[in-house]
Length: 221
Image 1 (cartoon, rainbow, N blue to C red):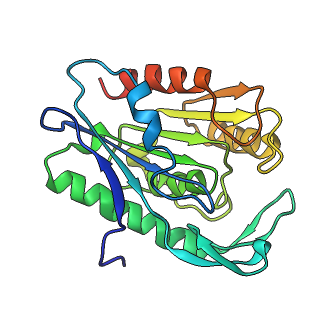
Image 2 (image 1 turned 60 degrees about the vertical axis):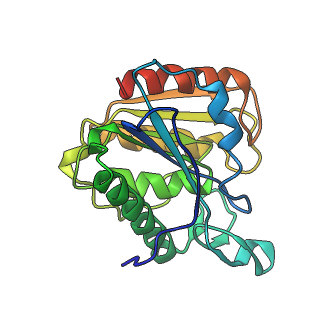
């Protein structure tokens, strides 16, 4: 179990927070990566959102020649079906759960907490959200894949979880095929999921951020 909380970049609302978004970066980045998106998310006046951008621990990454970098888990192979260290992935999901628990202690209801993740971060929030024992507010996954599809133990509390998947149609890092596979898996397992594709590579675009803002307004209302 995680005993110390992950270090995070936190952006507090002007008024007392009543909603939280925990947003995970991709491989080699850190919690500052998505913080600049926040000013572009124009949410309803009654939504006072605390944005939490945790930093992944630094570890050796096999596909990058064993180089040490911020990573939620080791990636052992870059074939189309990723081979990853699922134990490390679940440790990272447990660390996300610890951040959720802190938000609950701060008075944020579970249904007012959204998990978001890009690339590697997306694989972690899949695991954290779908297995969480309390109904969360939503799950946003960008340019990612469901790395633990064969072993994840989903909790019925989040069977009705709103899920938004976004992927670039020209992504050379995480092929869109993997995003589509995750979409199909979720549909087959009875989840309500929206899928949006954009003519981009492994990145984020302005139109995508607009759609995220619309979605957050809906699921956090």
